[in-house]
Length: 333
Image (cartoon, rainbow, N blue to C red; front, side):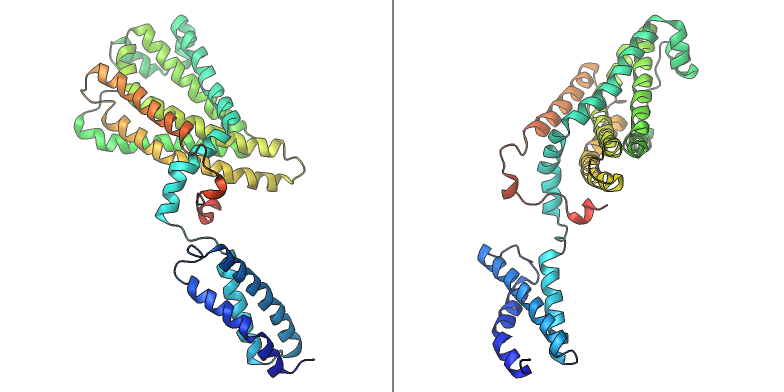
């Protein structure tokens, strides 16, 4: 067994170097470290773990053992703790990483869109052609309003801020149902998408039958492209969860669900700002007195801008050279 003084003398230079690197990383972490400094920090951490094991064996009651334990703990936190969230990291996620997540989920997005718009198209045709289906699919109060040549979309200017909040809350509820329904092996998500599609299509079909479709379309157009995109994204996230439960592969179902949940949550969080914009547009622009032509143009322009970003941002950037996306602390949410 080496003497304590010999042990300290032979290791002290390495401990001092590790201490120096840890002090330099205080405040900014490893952000400004060069590659060789990070390697040196890793080597110093491994060495101090080895020295700590020897000290615990040979000098368990000495103050040195406590000091080495503290040094090893500090190095571990510096190397392995989650990076602190920052506005820059959040901004990078919403601007770049979300677009990549969106493109990588194209299969789920396509299925989600089919489950929403397929029933909507059938309900539209059914409500347009059949009185029986109109009565079955469209609430009586809405039919009565449309029969009088009006719609329910006129919102007084003084009520628009409150309606924007109400509409935004409703949009969140719909998106949440589409997402959370995935934990029921995807059945809840399928139900939410199909039921919302049937309601949307049947109301539009009835509006066309009663001759008030231009009024309704001018209300829906400004916000509809963004809002329906968010519902499709939330549905895709729910389908991810359901797929993980139905096809876990070699993993346990809870493990497969945990892995899918991370990607699904990132999709839903990334769509949140779009949902906010849709709610504001629906509360303030959709019911406004702007010319109908302007309302018809606003929605496609917003939708086009969104899809240009989703399909172009982050392409060609090497993932290894880009800053991390969503902070791990939020990933585990």
